[in-house]
Amino acid sequence: MLEAFVFATIFCGFFGIILKKNLVMKIISMDVMSTGVIAYYVLVASRDGLFTPIISDGTNVTYSDPVPQAVILTGIVIGFSIQCVMLVGVMKLARDNPTLESNEIEKSNTP
Amino acid sequence: MTTITIAWIALPFFLGFTIYLLPKLDRILALCVAFVSAGYALQLFVEQSPLTLQLLDHFGVTLIVDQLSGYFILTNALVTAAVILYCWHSDKTAFFYAQAIILHGSINAAFACADFISLYVALEVSGIAAFLLIAYPRTDRSIWVALRYLFISNTAMLFYLVGAVLAYQTNHSFSFASLRGAPPEALALIFLGLLVKGGIFVSGLWLPLTHSESETPVSAMLSGVVVKAGVYPLVRCALMVDELDPLIRIFGVGTALLGVFYAVFEKDAKRMLAFHTVSQLGFILAAPVVGGFYALTHGLVKSALFLIAGALPSRNFKELQHKPLSTTLWIALVIASFSISGFPLLSGFGAKVLTTKNLLPWQAIAMNVAALGTAISFAKFIFLPHKADGEEVVKPGFWPAAILLLGSLFIANIAYYEAYTLKNIVKPLATIGLGWLAYLLIFKHSVLKLPRVVEQFEHLIGGMSLMLLLLFWMVMA
Image (tube, rainbow over the protein chains, first blue to last red):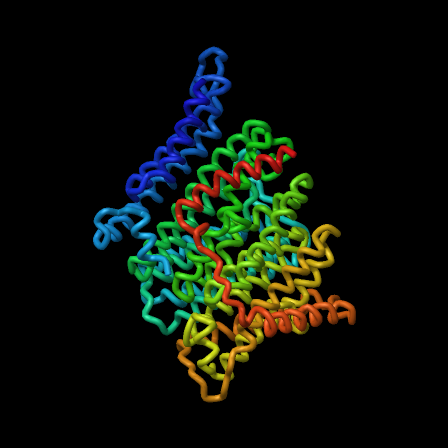
């Protein structure tokens, strides 16, 4: 069930990238998509259990897998920095194309 | 050797940021990094056995360096050195050199790693650095081209991440070897990411616009090495997991034919070179065992050709046919064109022969057609008019860079000197002759213009979903 929601998020983001006309909306759609991917990693990590794997005197409980969570931290940072860089690019473009319609920008910038 | 490897991977990033602190030393530091990489690659050839590093535990970072990665690293080093020499006397700021070196370092990391997550990090860093290099002139067009590149590569890499976690789920390891026994959807998603990033088959159609619209040194770097960061993992996977070998070969053949088909009909010099990159990536994938040598040859030749194309008086072939070049420039152009069409005495010949030897029977006809197409498309360059006092507007750094790249082509020739048998020599000569004939009789006068509709941004993103379906179907079958 949760898996279905996660995949729905990823596809919402993907179709948003295709269907939205505004460049900022496209970038936000990409963010939605990457949120879905991150959620999927967390879901995979928690498949065996929900407890944080920290050494303690506690009883033997089901621990979640720390590796995917550690890995997706890198992914979050990279996704964040890519969005920053892209938004700076969009800001520069916005000076000459205030509407930010991607078709218009593409038409005037392809030879 | 372990320490050297880790120091070598960290060095470009360290020096890249040092360039900001010492902007006066920018070129020298950048060139030093390229030389260190070249030295490291040569060291790999001396040492025969592959070096495998397991940092942290079995789910941690895995590095594998052997001769295959040695070829790719050497390509990277030589192309970076040539690009820096080309920019030596230009007014590029320290920012440009810092980005070039960070790009160099991230690609080196991609050539050394053998697990999906280090690869993801390396590819994304190279994506950001390439974005900054393409957008360096800060015109509207360059920003749009760069934005489009980052958008496409990032979307593809998100699919790749989902695939990586699916592969992790089956084997609890992110290493390339965990692809064995992974579910088909994991394979399809990972391959989609790598195919888009490497510019292969239909999903590589973002490549021509990006490579042709960037500045001369940047497109030399992009076409020479950056796309190979996406191709190398595919080659490595094909070598590590035998089941994937046929799939990679199919994509190799498809890419070689598609790229060359566009290149033959292209009327713009830089776009022709970019489409030709697509086709040559197919040659690398068509015979994964010897892909390394082909990648070296192609990287050297393509960056030399892009640097030369930047010095031509026009980009349009129609106009070029009426403006004679200076003979020196023409000779450089002809050496590069001959090497890429597989003429003996240049390393393109050895690479072509070696690839042909390692093809499976069903690939042979298609690859010969692709080689013929190469000869036809480069006849466009060879038959340009030239005279001793023609137009020459080369940048001051052009000749050192061109001599480095073309000289390496001659030297790389000795890596496979066994190729020089009569039978091997006759075949490429016949192919080239046939190609020239076809060019002079048919293609020189063709006015067919292929539509560019598939290269629109939204169509490229949408094409990814179709590609995903195709991959899924291929993996299931």
